Amino acid sequence: MNSYGTLFKVTLYGESHQEAIGAIVDGVPAGIKIDDELITSDLMKRQPGAVGTTPRKEKDEFKILSGVFNGFSTGSPIHIMIENQNIQSKDYEHLKNQPRPGHADFVAGVKYNGFQDYRGGGRFSGRLTAALTAAGSIAKMIIPFQFENKLVQVGALKDMEWLDQYLSEVSKAGDSVGGIIEVKVSGIPVGLGEPFFNKLDSEIGKMMFSIPAVKGVEIGKGFAGIEMMGSKFNDEILDARGKTKTNHSGGVSGGISNGNDLIVKVFIKPTSSIQKEQETYNYTTNSVEKLEIGGRHDVCIARRAGIVVENALAIVLADLYLINKAYQK
Image: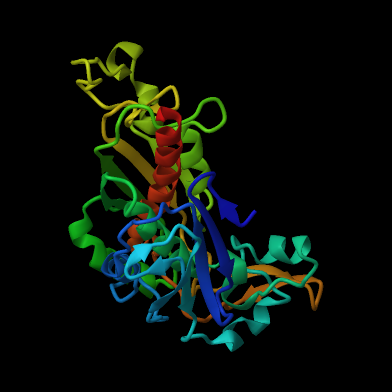
């Protein structure tokens, strides 16, 4: 429920407005150099500040409480903690009885019988992605692959040079917008993925949909492949290493990495918490009423989620990489 992985296992804990969030990373081999600067750099990439991002800014200064000694992993679980400091819980009091449209407020209240921490979205908040990002930084220290991510579309906008202006207009309208993030991973060998149920693309899908607000995942050409014939979609093999002429399959064949670049696209939906007035059910009055959410929220959460998607993918690859090495032995 709160853990992912077999040999490289990540457990997330905490809620948006509690004292801290964090991750326990188990299965890191002893002797791995732990790069604090990489963790810091990745967490900073997730920080708000650009147009369309939340005014809530946490320092995201992490503490490693176990599993590291003299700068190297010891082989025991690594505990990374990040304190929550910039919280305004009063902004969420009115949402206890009037759940936000599109948010987890309603389903969480029903599932947990009202005992859930609703402040800031609680366990369902994007705040938890800070801990996920930190865990992914650890994953990248294990695997010898190269990562890059980019925002390829926001709403109807595909030219990111106009992103600030576009998001300013959305913000003035009191609304929000979604986005598509693409992650490319190079240097992956042939063989990662364990069919039938632990295929590479199966694990990617599971992890990506675990990230708050993700509503779609594509590998390679994805849904655009519907317009292509097999003769065009098929990636012709050029050499004994498996290099292909095209990469429509996105680096995955039969659920196993094929040696080409892994290409993953993720659609992140528009932020549920918007400034524009909406209507939703009110438990206090037993009627549908107008709702003004207020608070501090992103106009486009996708703008700072690239590193989250990248590092979540790194967790998947680290686990399958270690499994593959174990089988090779």
